[in-house]
Length: 310
Image (cartoon, helix red, strand yellow):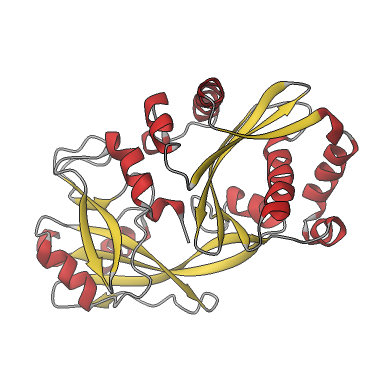
C-alpha cells in the first residue's frame, strides 16, 4: 500500500540510516524495514533509543499487536519504543484503544488515515468529488491546460531539475532532515522500474514534480515539489497526474496522509477528492527503558508523540 514499504525505498534512504544500519524482521511472511537508532543519535532527543525509519515504518499486513511486538523487542533488545503502521485496512477509527500494559511494556493501538483517489472517473464525476476551494482552483487550471505539459521521465537533466525544485521546496516548507535527500539518492531510486518521476511544465518551465511508486492495486504519490506561482501547481500536478494514470491503468492513486491526523496537509488531500482509508498503527514503549514509577500522564505524553521517545 505504500512505496515506503519497498526495498527500493530502503536502499534509496540508506544514506540516512543510523548504525547499526538497516535490519529486517519477518512477521506473517511479510518483510518490512526496521532501523535501530542508538543512544547518541542526533536527529531526535538525546539518549533516546527508538525504532524508526526516516519516514514511516510500514509493518506486515497482519500483525498481532502483543505477540509480534514482544518478539520484536526480544530480538532487538536495545529498542525503547517506536511505532509500526501496518498495511491492514481497518473499519473507520474504531481501532483506537486505550494503552495496554503487557509483560514487556505498553502498547497503544490507533488508526492512521491515508487518502486515496479512485482512478478512471470522468471529469465531471471527479470534479464533483472535490471540495469547493480545490474545485475552483482546478477549473482555473483546466481553462489554461493547453499551457501545461506533464512528462514521465528518467532523463539525467530532468532528475537534476526535480532535485533542485525539491531542495527549494524543502527549504521553503522547512522539511525535517528525514525528508531531505541527495541527487545521487534520487538517481538510485529511479533505477527501480516501479519508481517514476513526473515533471509538470508550464509554458515550457518546470513548475512541479512528483515521485510515484507502483504498489499493489495502484500507485503511491510519494514525494512532491513545486514552485509558488500564479497557478496552484501543487493541485495542478495532481490533476494532470490523475488524468495520465487513469488513461494508463485502473486502481487507485494514494496521496498518503498528513503529518498528523486532520492537519492542513490531510485536509488538502481530502479536498482533492481523495477518500479516507484507515490503517492500524501500534505505538509501544518498553518497561525497562522507562523511569521507575512513570506517571500515567507521562505515559500518555509518550504515546501522543509522533515517535515515542523516552
